Image 1: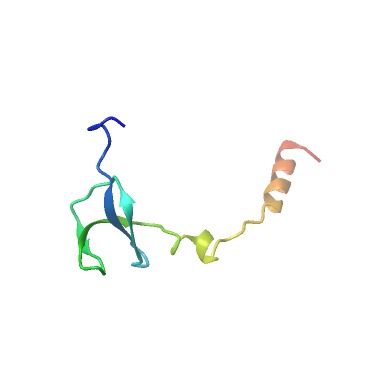
Image 2: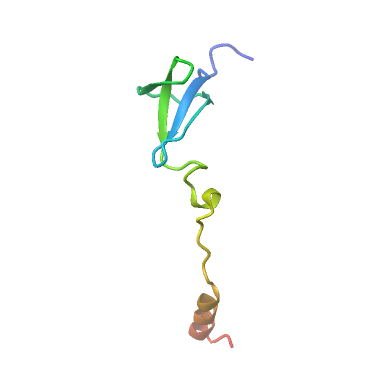
Length: 81
């Protein structure tokens, strides 16, 4: 690999804004906010709006839509009987 062309890859903490869950991983993203992790070290903090802990698909609160009414409305509108 060429030296000097790759971004800095370092440990970062991602925090879910709605649940407060945190995940320590590695990333190239940078921020001025920091947090102290359970190991006592300080890491950059990235706050995300949605994670697997708050996304409706992963939490089981996803809604299913009834599309049958939409199909019938389309057929009535465009004359497909």
